[in-house]
Amino acid sequence: MNDQEKTEHYIEALLPERTGILSEMESLAREERVPIMEQTGLEAMLLMMSLHKPKQILEIGTAIGYSSLRMADRLKDSTVVTIERDADRIRQARAFHERANAQDRITIIEGDALETADQVSQLGPFDALFIDAAKGQYERFFELYEPMVNEGGVIFSDNILFKGLVPGTRTPEKKRMEQMVKRLQQYNEARMADGRFQSMIYPIGDGLMVSIKEPRNNG
Image 1 (cartoon, rainbow, N blue to C red):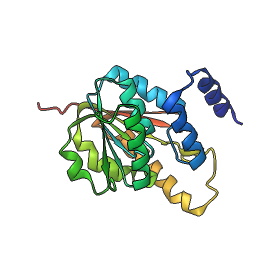
Image 2 (cartoon, rainbow, N blue to C red):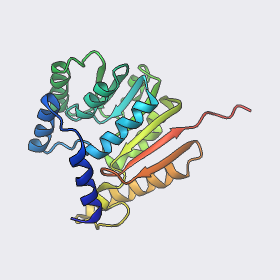
Image 3 (cartoon, one colour):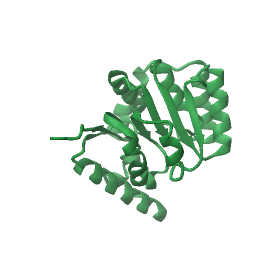
Image 4 (cartoon, helix red, strand yellow):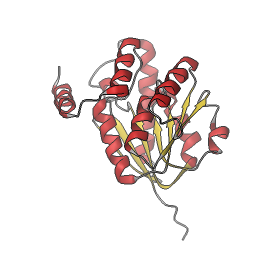
């Protein structure tokens, strides 16, 4: 375990333990190897969202509905639209949302996020966008859904350092990972250089990028 991992474990141990449905969802994610956001990164994002107070949140990548439920639970006045293409995961997510009485504030769009932009646009605009799906498609997700984010809105991108592979502290063990890592590196470079946003990468969880959409200069 390196120093960064020790720090993450230390911080995570200080977080309040989740109980009930959330604990059940975490157990299911471990058993079925469903990726959910690391707790330190998720808590950081929820804290920033609590400050920003988005009314409408768009999430790309529902999985079993864990992060969407955490957002709905923390932000009582917010609604969440979330996109997922896996029918089994959608079924699981809806069941959890109903048990938590959150189904009225969480809308799941079934389909590939690369193909659902027209449908999702009817439910916008959004005050926050959370990208947490196929890592090699982050740039396309951004291009499709960033226009639906209000000026002053915030875009969160998870797994932006991807287990240390993106900054090069670890080397990909499989060839197919190299292309994904390269795309994440290109995404990071593009976002940090994009003058339309104030962006910063935080080395917490698996890497969290926060991008604030600047108001247009109409002068």
